[in-house]
Image (cartoon, rainbow, N blue to C red):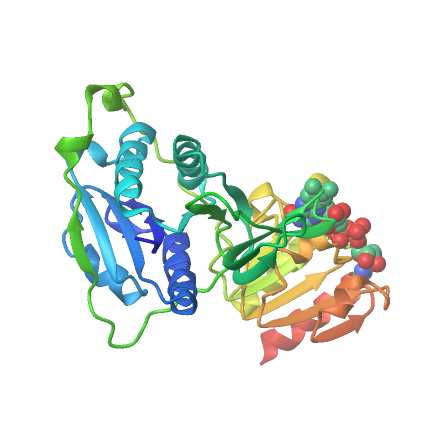
Length: 337
Ligand code: FAD
């Protein structure tokens, strides 16, 4: 009762990074609230899953292991989560803002009449005073996300309904293994008790998995280009620098819209969120919709011909100059060293 639940996405035995990020965050929130962190593992062939989820902070894992539950389908997963939540009455329930979480979270919240904040970029525990009644709600989940086209960062609370539910963007939180963690305690979900024929209404006849050719999320170094790079041809310089440094190429939305780079490279509010060790922003002005996806990089270097570009406010080093002059010099230097 009153614990924090994290829905863990599992595909072919692999737990999604976003779920491990949420467990790490959930552990921190549970410690602040003095409650337990519980994971939901729904799929097939999940033997031993409690060891991995325990490493990321789960105290308990509710396991539903059945051939009907993999690959993911909306109806059976929704039914089982609703059944568990009705008994366990969590105070907080978290899902990744992935295609699965975006499908599942709103359905569960709608069935439980709990409401949900989509696409959060941060979660905190705070208290809130309700102005009209003067009532103080202690230790609420602050669900933080960009709003109004990214022009403000909104804090959303849900004082009256439980669970407080959110989907959280992939990559915005760190995943961290706890040293010497114990395996989580297993609670088995009785699948046959809850699933009905109605949950089988949708059958998967065939699955085609498209391989992601570009995946910049895990790159340790990102050389990102903006509209200031000027052309698709000039982006070739960024690819060369990224190759020399052992990194990947990212892009702003303006660069993607102009056709300089593929959409899969877009970083920011409507692209991916990254947190590399080094982020080199080339010809990027640094609008909030872009920085929302990269400001947690360990080191940021900006190359911009405008010394007043907003990106310089968050950069550790700002190089003022033309990208087409600076980047060849960097390539030459790093090739030598
Ligand atoms: P610009 O703002 O045009 O900046 C170009 C920069 O290059 C300038 O600072 C200029 O000084 C510099 N420059 C020009 N020439 C050179 C040169 N030769 N050498 C060096 N520097 C040079 N944007 C994203 O990036 N990601 C998102 O996910 C995203 N989502 C959005 C969602 C919404 C709802 C909205 C409304 C906007 C979104 N945007 C997003 C767009 C965002 O607001 C900016 O328009 C965009 O980030 C600007 O891209 P930019 O910095 O490349 O271009």
